[in-house]
Image (tube, rainbow, N blue to C red; front, side, top):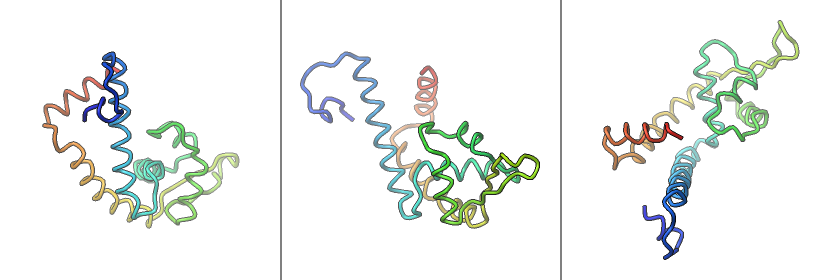
Length: 148
């Protein structure tokens, strides 16, 4: 991916600027590809993230605060995401009996089944996105990204 070609500039860019723009372009490519992969399921990337978090909870329900803390994208409106998943029958929401102010959210059986289908699609998509990188390069990239 040649940054200068993509943003159509002939001007030499300072390395920090070029690097950050490059990261943003790569992020956009990844998000677009994952969004396209999830489209047949009628689920957004953020909704997919919520479903994965809920599955990871096992038998324990999550509340909105837990979901918000664990979301990859912190800019999401978690209540709206849960409402959309609820309308699709992929999650359940109930009032906690011990603390009536607390809302508990769990993934439904249908949600688990759909998520399993999405997992297969996502594994292929992830493999395609990193196909040009060796395992060693992926490890090195992760080490570098950890410095951010």
